[in-house]
Image (cartoon, rainbow over all chains, first blue to last red; front, side):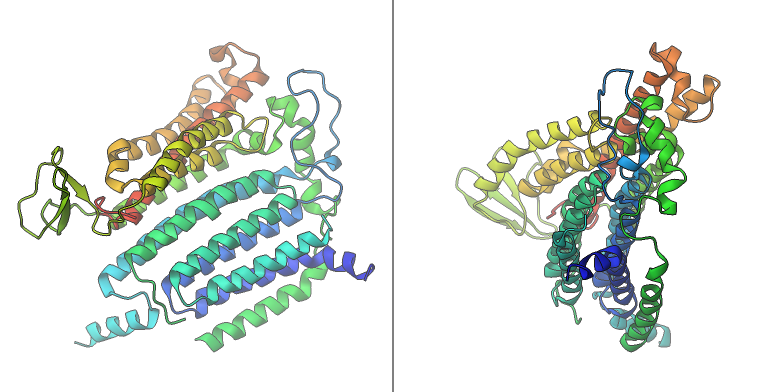
Length: 135
Length: 81
Length: 277
């Protein structure tokens, strides 16, 4: 058990990110309801963010806020290995806010489709479109 | 963080993600999705990404749930799958 | 379709999991992602920008161009929601509920009926799904909202030293307005923060960000190189970068706040801006 846990912990984050990504992909392809598809899209996005945050982590590193005298000029040299990698964090921070904006647009489209067809189920919408085309 | 609690949080994330897609009620799905976002935020905070976790706590668990509920309020709660 | 989706997902997932062995171990400090660019940011971030929170200095200074277009994307999403959903509504189109305050009688005015004046002292407009006893919710929100807003301003202003910044502060400000709209009603929130103001604030936030960059150009430096603002602000170049980050974060906070409130107005009332969640 003591040997197994570090072995799992080394790759566990990557497995989870792949499982979540596939969960989102499955929902986007296979689910019939539009809101379920949108939730699947968001799960996909968060899984990518989980991947980026996982590769940024360093064992024994602390938060990427430089310690020491914040207001004085003369501070000691900073060792990069002591701090977690900040670059993926700031890439993902903007991605989260953009994801809520795209969620808003996607839900607006869903409301618009519901207003037009009276349903959120994809096969019903396809059926109605085919009926209209046939007439 | 190689503590088992980190692995437990990630496992819960997967379970709540499956739950959000499996619930046969869109309002319930939005609420479970909010729980998913919050658990994800905990996982990121434990990995040291405090800025990302802060944003996710405000955006994912707060605002996007309100958006989902608003959309469900104007459409329908029923779903076939 | 479900079967096909399952096959695609299992195949892709299996391939990806099979190749996780090639990934660097979790927490490896010498992995490629942690060795090339980020040590520079960590070692020189504070000396260059006087901001201990490296995430903020990377976000708004080193990669400011990136963040500017992210803000533009957020604003464009707000516009897209507006164009998709918004529709004008004439008064009298839909049935409305009014309460006659002196007697407590609720009137249901059908389509085409005469409506009382908007600012009538005798009649008060009710939502069609009106829930009577919400005094606890209203008062709790009234107490909590100012604290949320002060915390949001703190998060924006203190982004250099602690987790936070324009994005988080803007979202918190927007959340306080959404809380107001949920606890009271949507029309009152729209009277406090009208749609036009939301559009104006959103574009103003993007303008503050891009304008700072153009100002740097006018002073003869590269786009978004805040060191050029040092003579204007009257501080050293390092402090000018610190102040530049703050200015830009304020722009981001304006844009994000206005856009999220705007999307909420459009989504929660399905574009009518009349009765909402």
